[in-house]
Amino acid sequence: MSNEQIYRITVPTPFAVGDVNMYLIKGETLTLVDAGVKTEEAWQMFQHQLRQLGFTPSDIEQVVLTHHHPDHVGLLDYFPSSLHVVGHIKGERWLSKAPEFLEKDQQFFEQFLKECGVENAFLAQLSEMRSSLRYSCRRSLSATIQEGDAISGLSGWTVIETPGHAQSHIVLYREQDGLMIGGDHLLLAISSNPLLEPPFNGETERPKPLLQYNRSLRKLFDYHISRIVTGHGDDVTEVKELVEKRLNKQRERAYQVLDMLKARPLSAFDVCKQLFPAVYEREFILTMSETIGQLDYLEDIGKVVKRKVGEHYVYEAK
Image (tube, rainbow, N blue to C red; front, side):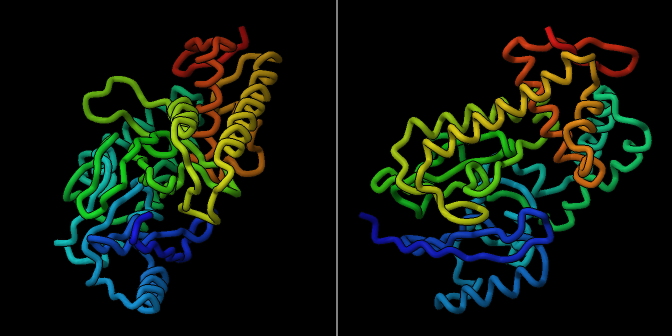
């Protein structure tokens, strides 16, 4: 068994998901896995819990990121720029927030959402859709990691790529005791939402995050996992059962969408409004990501086809 000690640190977020968990690993190198959200409240609570463990922020030697979402990276802006930060290359563009990337991101979503049948009134709100980035950071990665990598100072831990919830998502796995630090890949109380992102450099097609996420969930079957410590909420111990539950729930949602399309062809935006009538305006990117994911899934299994009507596409049941 490892002599490492792992501590959970939990801070509040301004998001509906609630509190976010970070993990401090006291081993060869004092490592923080994930870095909370950029609010003064989170920073004060983070420091308080560190002090209770006998540490200060200056004691932390490196940070490893499970993914780039603001509630997992924001506190990096409170650390010195010299801090060693490790993550997947696909998170770099979101961390550094280069103006040219943000412009491309905006252009991608404007064009894509038009093709989804989104009304102009909603397109006008696009500037607000990335408002959560104010809780993120502006940094660059010191080093990048990918499938199968080991991390300096974390002997016995292996990187597993788990894209879906985010294109940059990874988990850390310790084979000797089956412990996994899972980020948002598999959460006990809620389903992780596979979120839309623009293509990465060199990619010609947009990612299909729900299809990726399902593959990444099934990937967990390849490992003996005793416990997953998660980015939100409590640990997961019944991994196989929860993965199957998540996959079954997703399939049920997809067939709910298929029933809509059997009645008549619909644009992705039409489907979104029917699926989420009470929240699609308030949680637009989340609900559109979910909707596109189900349509990608149905298209992938051959249940629907899409065709262009004017400037947008409609989906119809085969």
